[in-house]
Structures are given as structure tokens and as C-alpha cells.
Amino acid sequence: AQSVTQPDIHITVSEGASLELRCNYSYGATPYLFWYVQSPGQGLQLLLKYFSGDTLVQGIKGFEAEFKRSQSSFNLRKPSVHWSDAAEYFCAVGGGGGADGLTFGKGTHLIIQP
Amino acid sequence: EAQVTQNPRYLITVTGKKLTVTCSQNMNHEYMSWYRQDPGLGLRQIYYSMNVEVTDKGDVPEGYKVSRKEKRNFPLILESPSPNQTSLYFCASKLAGGRETQYFGPGTRLLVL
Image 1: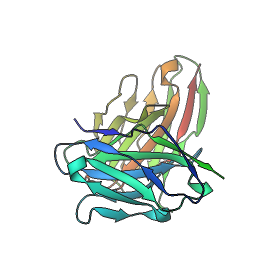
Image 2 (image 1 turned 45 degrees about the vertical axis):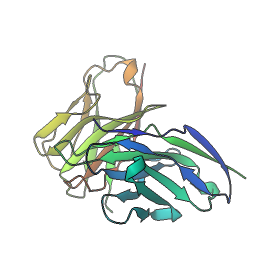
Image 3 (image 1 turned 90 degrees about the vertical axis):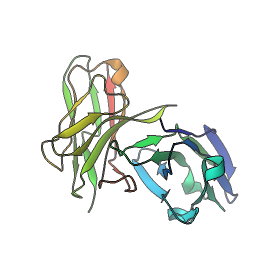
Image 4 (image 1 turned 120 degrees about the vertical axis):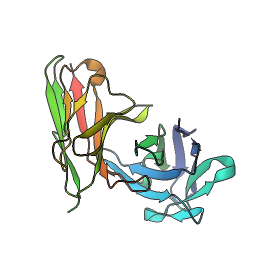
């Protein structure tokens, strides 16, 4: 069965500093990988996704993520965070097959210090 | 505007009183799904539907029912709610295929007393 681990429950970063959120997945075949962001009181918004090709993917709001098959990882990065980036971030894995759904990690809560 | 809508956004009810949370999408998506979000547990799938009249259980289906009579609607039914169903619920939809992006509704916060 597929699974997603986000090792960091909370991360605190100073405004303007760089950010890396970790995501490890378990999946038998080539996974489809997603990062979503949930701002306070809001639904989930897709930041970026990977399913093939270039292992470095660019997303919205200046985020990028790198797929590393050897490490089963799909870490999210941003070179300089803004106060508006404070939110909950979810990594998810999906694949083919009948279910077609997503398996989510438990999320990482990002706090931005002024 | 392409969107997934849910109603109500907030609901307080009592144990055993049947309720329905509606979900509608205007993107002609085949696939629809319900998730619940609980602190420290992330999002877990309750039920999903690959198309009209085709539904199946997700990871946490106990205590819930769904129906898919029309392509755009996918209501979630709690026939006898219990306090452990207090949660934040999200509906999502997408085109068929694992690569497709799921679009989420704004969420329904449910409190069962």
C-alpha cells in the first residue's frame, strides 16, 4: 500500500530565509506526487505536481520540488519565504489503478517569524 | 468560475440526527471524492466515485454513505452522526486518470454533540 511521511510536524522559518519541507513516499511503481497548501480556514490549493520527466518541478508562488527516486523523496523548497507562506503543507501520492485517489501525509505546519 | 462547492460550510448537530453535506462541481469531472481532515492525521479518504452510479469505499467509510446520481453532485450522508465524526470535511473532483489534479472544495466543519 502506498504511504507518505512528512517527518516535520512544525517548522519555523524567518521571513526571507530559505525553506525545505521533507516528504518521503512508499509506492511500488512510478508515483504521481503532489504538494498542496492549506491556508488558515481555506481549502487545499495545488502547488505543484510530478509524474514524469524533469525531476525538478516548478510550481506556483515560487515553490519548487525535486523528485529523487533513490531516496523516495519529493522535498518542497522555496529560496525566500514570505509571511503569507504561513500555512499547512501536504504532500500526497497517487497512482494508476482503480482508486485514482490520493494518499496524504499528515502535513507540516509552517510558521514564519518576522 | 470553475469550482467545487460545499454546503453547509459549518454545521452543529446532535448525535443521531441525520444530515447531508452537499458537494457540487461545474468542471464536468468524472471523479469525485470525500475526505476528512483531523489534527495530526492529515486527510483521509472516506468514499470516492469514478463516475455516475459508481462509488466505492475509501480508507475510513464507516458511518458514512454517498450517492452519485448526477455527474456534478456527490452528497455525503451521515445517517446517525456520532461525536467521533466531528471533523473538517473536504469534497474534491478531478478528471479521470492518476495524473490529473484534484480540486478541493472550501470544506465543511462539522461538530456533533
